Length: 349
Ligand SMILES: [Zn+2]
Picture 1 (cartoon, protein in one colour):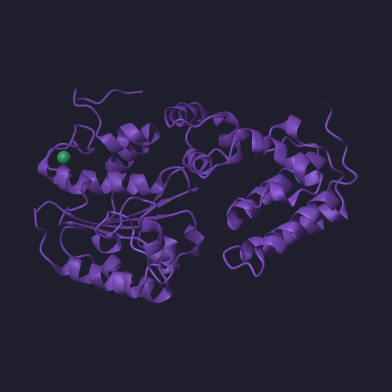
Picture 2 (tube, helix red, strand yellow; picture 1 turned 180 degrees about the horizontal axis):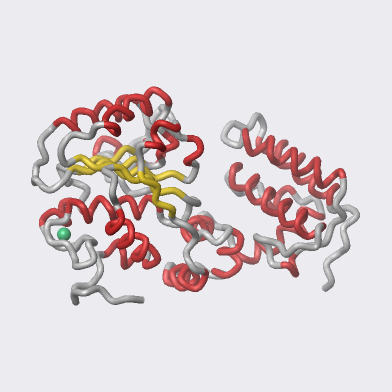
């Protein structure tokens, strides 16, 4: 690890997610375009990298490597979410989770206000209109103006088209960072106006160190369960998933125990079954599993029931946010898994 040319410590956000340091410095050095598109798997810090880039461009006392100092007036404004030259486009459904709730969302007691409508998962035209007036205003501190769009695939079509023009001819000091784990879902015209900035999985050792610092027990198992994505592993742990429960899942499905999954949010339960099915298919081909420890998995024959389970899980995943009857669906999916495992070689104990 190359130490920075100054003896100033890294800003807090880089300290919090140390694997972002190198991609950040590289991005700052190689940014040629006024619009960057951070892309790669979710759960590895895309949003954080976008914020780090924004903070660095706005910082008034940058480090030698280009990153933000964390201590100037601009950094203080940025870190307190009140920087006048920064605008964040985020779906309402993500604001609270990411720590960017609007004052209007919080009641006098500091608790989130109960709302009758479900917060939107889309970035809508109103947000882009606000961005358009932001883009036309003069920079308050004279250094830059930065818009972060996360996740960029949440822009609905009308909003994406409205963004396009500004992305094409940004005024003055305006810069953009879009971040997306599904860049193929963006309008091609949006993609082509951005400089791509790939962000891959961090090294396993770095992820494990970080997970342990976060107090995640069974970090090795949960990191594999999350496909090597440290933030996702942390989120699963915080949502109550434990390494032991993950390791027991294959056997419980083989016994047809749908209650193994009934406490989980539906999309996560379907996701877990898809990972199990994926690993079983790999096993049946003699390949190493991706998400489960090999010793936790039976070895099924590649069979028609295994394929139809795979199909059923894909269909369920497409409708995971709107299940007709969550309990029945889960029972049916687990029963199909049990069927697929009927002829499996039992685990040696
Ligand atoms: Zn600064």
